[in-house]
Image (cartoon, rainbow, N blue to C red; front, side):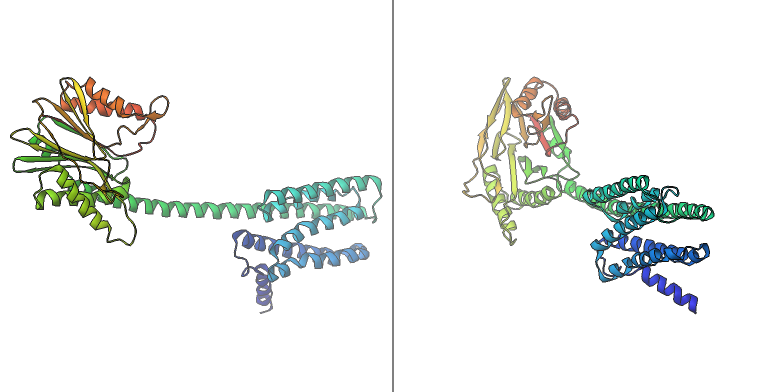
Length: 455
């Protein structure tokens, strides 16, 4: 029973103050100081008990006070004086060694025990300034002791056999202190490594869940967009260059055949990635309703109605949502090949007689606008073989090249003119190759969507 009681007291002393320590550094410092305090106190007690056997009873006047001083730190931690306790425990061993060296002289090499006290600040402090301060104090004490021992004789004459025993005990003390310090750092490193492993595992699981969710969202987004065959069946000579920045995109393309009219569009919703994809669901649904349910044919009227539906959808939110889309929308009469077009911020390009012409878009998005005006419908009667291009701004805005600049629309149009006589599939490949070459190792900055049609 007495043994159990002793170990219970030892446990209480070891964990004294731990309940008050919230910060990790305080908790680790409390345990280290308490354990080292117990060790030092026990060593001092053992040393004090052996002194009378070596006829060194007078040394008890020195060992007993320091035994008490070494026993105080657990009490300080218990009271929550963590900062003071760290300084106290760093300085008391230095004071102790200074007095020991003044008593014993240079023969026993006590001053080298300062190598152990110099390691204590490394354990107890995280602030480099405090570490350097305490380490410098150890060096100064070492230099003082070296000077003192060279100038003055020992205060105590120790027999030779006692010196031998003392030397062995001193070396054992060095080994024990170094062992505890290394054990502390090893435990700290292992705990940190285990924490990193657990965090990496958690992050990996979360990342897998997020990627799986976004990948599923990609399948949903692909489901709302028509297959490329939808365009090829109506305009056999055509291509789509679609490169999302992320797994899902804010860009989408639209194609719908209704009676004699074929609707095709390249749209760029606010943002990219998941936010952009969410806006694209709203905008795509509004576009489908305007064409499929309301049977609108004029592209300007379609964009007006889509704007109304998008604004109405986002007005249900308590927040002032101004998300929407830029779009280039063509309505092609399959029989007459007449083209009606309207655009929100994104223009239309067409090539006839080796010349590229741009029709400018209405300068407003499909969505909430400060000064809304109706979208303008442009009607074109193009000759057979004319080329029509619908696109978003992601291609021209890509950074890259030798100077890290934007690709720009001028270079974009030059590639189109340079390859206008190639088959549409080859044109697509040329555009994609130029984009990849320009981008190089840089990050893709936005989604890319280009639709090319040969009438």
